[in-house]
Length: 453
Ligand SMILES: Cc1cc2nc3c(=O)[nH]c(=O)nc-3n(C[C@H](O)[C@H](O)[C@H](O)COP(=O)(O)OP(=O)(O)OC[C@H]3O[C@@H](n4cnc5c(N)ncnc54)[C@H](O)[C@@H]3O)c2cc1C
Image (cartoon, rainbow, N blue to C red; front, side):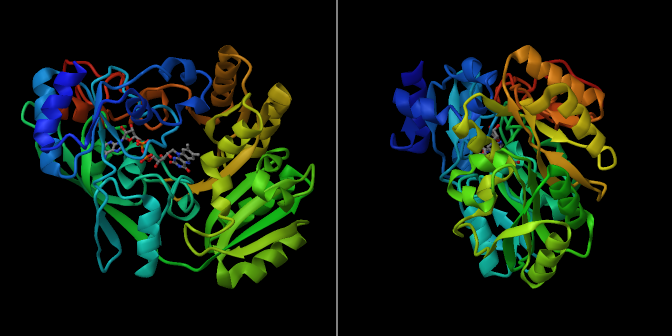
């Protein structure tokens, strides 16, 4: 099987250098950060592709999909493999298509649209954009490694979302070209609202090959940390900055103790027992921010300019899902949830969760704007894993008190939290991948009969 596939792919690519069959390489290219979840860890550890290949052009992708389609062989796309719920793990073997060599930034248009290939790293785009007076509207904390295509297909938002919302909001993603897995694969342009058919569908219904991604005018940013005696104080202060339009900000994060104690390289930013707020604020507002923090009872413990992805320390390395990574490093019994608290009821929701679960749940807040323009307390709480039943109980309880949960302990789109109720991702799968060969098993509502819109 492997040899036959490898021979066919080598013939298409015209060389064997970009086709991989060595078990260690296949294992690496078949996995991501799925091990964040103690539930997914044993389920996905042994999943592996038969072969991996690195195309460098759309024509090569078209030829490979034609070949795989004829053989009814599954194809799973990979960007940089930083997804955190096994999105790019091939469940049914087949071919992994590693797009890391398709990494060209074609241009940044005068009105601030980056036109690029999917394998372009977000960190490279941020650096190049800033040279031209632009910057990413939002990026995951995996900025340096993650690819633009993987972010659009597997991510949701990140640093910058407090001002610009998530990937699905405010026309942040303008358009992309998608290669289909039809009997005769083709390239289809998706523009405007049509991007939502493919966005965050984990490569189950098309392969992004050319992307138009909206940027924002560059701002000179400063990173600031403020320590508070209590989580409530840190939350109130950060919320006041996050929701007010007077502040130009890129990040508003809050950690309750002991989360900051996990951040080994920057542990000195906060004394034992205190909560930490972490913000990125426009340079000209730093003095006003520090004054506001002090009058709210905070102690400013760090002020440092952001120079781009190479800034040291890069405080975003401790935010979003990097927080979870530091927690797991400190104690492997930790895992996480991905939540959205209610802007009006959040304090009561925190109280109820603390009452029921005590220190089993530790609050980590990331303020973000939703599609209606309301800034909400998004959250990636650190959770002590006891049993699967206990974790599911916590998810069900969160939902029962109005806390949104995108469950990161499942490996299919529908419960992952971004599946569309209007079924357009599923309809696109019926249309573009009727044989179910793209990343099979990740869209469980897919069946080979038609659904009505
Ligand atoms: C420490 C850590 C921190 C993180 N922080 C964040 C965060 O702040 N915000 C956030 O949203 N996510 C976050 N993530 C998740 C992940 O890093 C991001 O979503 C990232 O952008 C994924 O990019 P990637 O290139 O690694 O994608 P991959 O992991 O390679 O792929 C992700 C999914 O997209 C599919 N895919 C990849 N390329 C394409 C393509 N060209 N066409 C179609 N499908 C494709 C894959 O099949 C897979 O299903 C974090 C993960 C970790 C481990």
